View 1 (tube, rainbow, N blue to C red):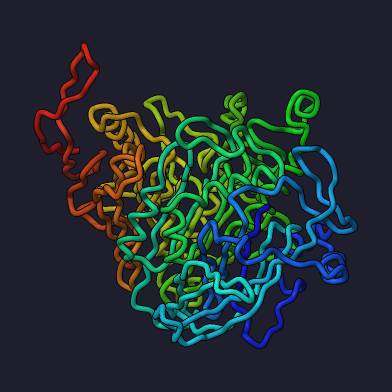
View 2 (cartoon, helix red, strand yellow):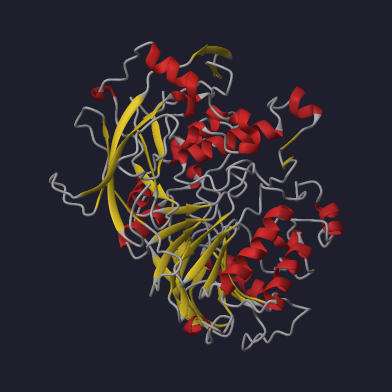
Length: 616
């Protein structure tokens, strides 16, 4: 049975812990109240019968601790307390029911009535000797109805804190976590830094990038742009749990739990607050408003497939995500909403989008690419739905009007136009499949003279750095960058597959072709797994890209790949690009150090015979 305590938003110490104060008992959407938990029923069941919770010695903090969604006066905290790593096979109780559905036996069973009680404390320092100053504290109760998750507020802005959970009435403690609040929106902030990740595929390799960033400890916050989990199953050294593709609430909870067993994920979660959005694989591949590439509401999906509707699968994915991730429910009047913004002093606004699941028009499904080619520039097509799109443009304008120095846009998929081959092919599953939506975004930026825009993206498992330019509608000079309206930094994957190696010639030839075809693209690299660090000051933004040479084993290997600068007011990458040099891939107007290799045709092995520099 799983016991996780999530969403402790540090409510003032005087606030009484209760079931009603636990955000996870509410529906993910107030427009769908029936998805919430019947709290009075839970209370009656738990206390009327005088049930006794598990003994402290029967419990362990199995998945570490985490924090996220920092605001100036509050942060979400998370942990899991359980008798084992095993997962409860019962499904959620919704309003009007008092039983749980056991997916394995396909029968309804009595709900586990035993509430788990945890004390939590927030400290100003990490002393470890019991003398830490307690800033705020409280109790939190939770039950199996919500996979044992909780919520609760009151801290100072832009301040580092430590926190810890304790099983009530015992000395059993969680690991000590560290977090940091955001600045007030009107504060003068000299510097903030973010480590940016995406696409962490558990069976595909180890999460070395998480551990490397945590151990260096050079950033304030983590931004995860999605594909935090993958829905498909795989065998092997890091086989998935469950072993197949996931559909039920129990499936999604189990998969989230498995990912949190990775020690590097636990380390980065313990040391830094996360700001996340989901991509498609937190639900299923290539999602849109009416389905996924491998599941639509067709007759076959019910008679031959998993026998689950698209909407039911989405609800299962959403509930498990909010239970297992340290994230706030941004606006409960809107179903499936994860798009939200963070005003971090006068320095920046971080605008987090959902370009996948909220209200997206049909995308590439693996069999309809010709159809997508015909409609990709249809004005009626949308990546995010009219409500989110209007909110996005309003957020950009309000950010400029309030005088924020920079606008960071956290989105899942590549924004820039990218011709993938010499025939001018475009993807149908990123912004290239929704050209009118991209044009509306660019027009809003240009017409309203909104500059200093930094778009962030993941999804592609490769590194891409480009000037943001409205090619064909506004003049743009490739050599100087003049005419651009910002910059896009798109990162590679934590562990998901990239370009086939060795680095040269396979990956390098591909990168050079991309640079030649796409005039606004300045650097492309797809061999390494890794992440990038974004440092923001009022005068400039710098991006440092790091690569992990191998994810086949757990290791701390890391190499710097390239560094880029965006100077305030320039609205393009500062020249010379990356200082004129990158360590891998292809760099416009610069040198790339690459390994000169020869291959033994009999054994297939590659051998290093020297190094050379190459001008792109």
